[in-house]
Structures are given as structure tokens and as C-alpha cells.
Figure 1 (tube, one colour):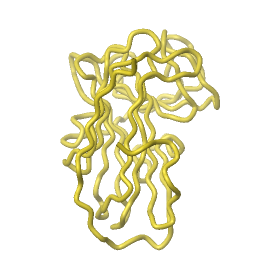
Figure 2 (cartoon, rainbow, N blue to C red):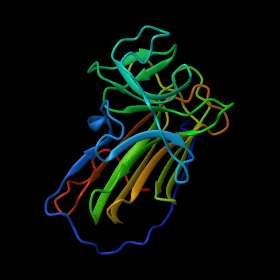
Figure 3 (cartoon, rainbow, N blue to C red):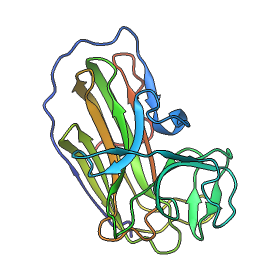
Figure 4 (cartoon, rainbow, N blue to C red):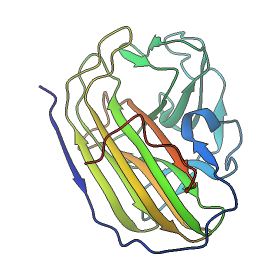
Length: 230
């Protein structure tokens, strides 16, 4: 059974000045060795409340198990956790004694229990406009996932909360439980921040989480193809 609970929180929409042409941001595709990285930034804290940039970038993010092709931004408190990690190998990887890593999503892992914090990917609106936001959180641990909470905030306002308790992923290329989010129209001012966070939901062990988000400026934005509206 896919055990999951999620809450979509209603938003007020407004007509704003739109950008001159459609533009697309993709969290996985845009991941890079800069932080901040254009509109994106990577760090930890309390989603929607606090945020501290990661300062350590590692090109071999799985030295403990020897998997090649992983890069990450990390707080480096415990086995590189908390972190935001990317698979650069171009194919599925199996790493870290039980985690499958897709080539099409980031891996986000919260901080250890003794210094708890969400691991957060932030996107800052470059202009006042109407945006379309879609994406997902999914379980990547194939051994014993203990549950996470996927969060989306606009500045300090919650937009989405999805709890994932299972099932586990399946090696070599089947993620476990998944929750999707989709906001067809979000009115943002320049400088507004959308925060995508992974909370440990009690304990950080076995909390490797697949994440991606796509942000598009309408009106020429294509329909969402990776998710359904809840």
C-alpha cells in the first residue's frame, strides 16, 4: 500500500505583470556547482521560516560506498547529511547501502536528529509575474524508509504538505511512495521565494528523497505532464 497523506492549501491568485516570453526553470536540470545558482539556492533550516546556505560542494558525494557520478551541496554533519544531491552519470545508480538515485531528480536528505533541520531547495522569482509550479517528492530508500514530509512554501506561507510513509523503492529503478504538487497559477512578486523542503518526520534515518520542480512563466507554458492536481 502506498501510505501517504497530503494537504493542498488554498491560495489567493492575482493578476500581475507577466514576463515578455515564457521561461522554464527545472531544479534537476539547473543544478550546478554555484550556490546561489541563478534563481536556485540550496541549504537547510525550517522550511518557510529560516534558511542557511550550504557552503560545501562535493564532486564525489558517496565516498563511503564508492558510487561514482554523484555531486552534492551539503551541510556535512553526518555522512554528508543534510544534502541536495544530483546524479551526473546519466543512468540510475544504487548507492549508500540501499538508495536508488534517478538521473531525472535530485536527492534531498534532511539533517541528523541531533541537529534537526529540513533540507531545502529555494527558488527566487526574478520578476513580478504569474507562474506555473509543478513537481513531486518520492521515496528513494529501498531498505527501510522511515517517512518524510515534503513541503512547499511561498515566502512564509505554506502551499503544500505531503507525508510519505512508504512503500520503499525497488532496486534498480522503481521509486517508492510519491506525492505530486501542481499550482497552475501562482502570482509572485520579484524576490518572492518558493521553498521546497524535506522534513525528517521524526527521524532522519533512511530518508533519501527524490525531488524535482518545474517552474514556468505562462501564458505559453506547456501543460504539466509529470503530475496531477490534488
